[in-house]
Length: 582
Image (cartoon, rainbow, N blue to C red; front, top):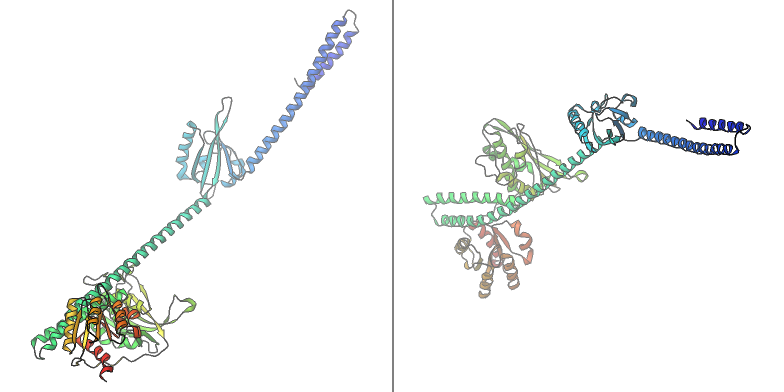
């Protein structure tokens, strides 16, 4: 009974009590009891009315909360779905509808699986079966398939909806988020990390490669130095023996061959020194086209008979500052390399010179003169290209692998650059860039007159730690008419100089010796005898020691690179003795 009907009944009861009051036979006590009962009913009516108002207010509040919840559910930025335990949609908000490319009213009654990409449907069915038996919150990543749309990566947070008297699981709440952008960003970051890692690994590999080449360069320079000492013993003794034989002696021919072989071995050590950056560089201003043209006959004999040599030499080149011997070595090594690339097949090797700009210089480009050698041979793959300048690497069965390593050393010592174009089956082009100079080409120095018959006089202090070299140089000096004072190192040389009482007229001083090397010994000699001629000897080149030991009045008077012939020694001694004999 509602409050209105209850109030009407109370009103009827009051009227009946009033009718009873006028009848005879009804006691006053009875009337009072009835009035009290009516009053109690009125109070109950008032209380019921208040409760009814409270209930109506609560009902309105609940309705407002329901509308507020529905508004939040419908317009939430994230996609929400409510399903039963079988995954059938009961409610879906607007975000879920937009995400799945459909309308909200079409979603109830649809299976969630129908919005999952085919490759993930079996997995979601398995998870739904597991959730029905173990309804606990879960996070799942899978691909969803919108209606007539592109599949996307989604993250789903699934929680259990409970209800009923026993708070049992009645369905699932699905919070769905599109993580495609996040996944793409993650993939991009992973790719960047992998790229950065590869670059770091490549940088480390490059650094290790440079360290290896530097170590090999130091080793090559040391080997060349020691080998030159050995060659000096062979060359000096062979040449001295040849000088003691009559011109018609059958043995001279054999000694001549020994001298030639030793000189060829010395050329090999020059390649080692060139690779190590310690090669001798006697620069002058050259016309690159003329230097290459003068090698025509030699180059034709160096290439395969199946190869055709094509010349494209520019006629108006500026000069370069270079060592002519090393330029010829570059040309010969590149021509030989091109001929090897042709093998036994017919092909073309093109020699080209011209002017160019350094492509790496940008707006500060400078003029360069280039030498280009192109072959139509087999070309190189990336693996071979990365190793061609490594010392002792060769694709030839009998190759030493020093040619291109020496080319690299020579080019770097001339402050030049190397460019390579190649591909398997498409041939190879080497372009060597030399900095151009403004001055014109210089003529080569005239050949020195033979010094074989020159004789000198005086005492020469010979400081050399290698006994074989010391003996052969001593015999050379004695044959020229000098008295020789031998010393095995710098300390022994200083002691001999002090004992000589100014009888020593010149010093031959090896640069590398134990206990005290040539540098310190030279400094001490200059303190004791400032005007005494001192000639340095070394298996390294003059360029290697020039900055420290050939510096004017405080340095050495001259330099001899091992191995040297008696006429080389005679020429420098004759030069330093000329002021005293005039």
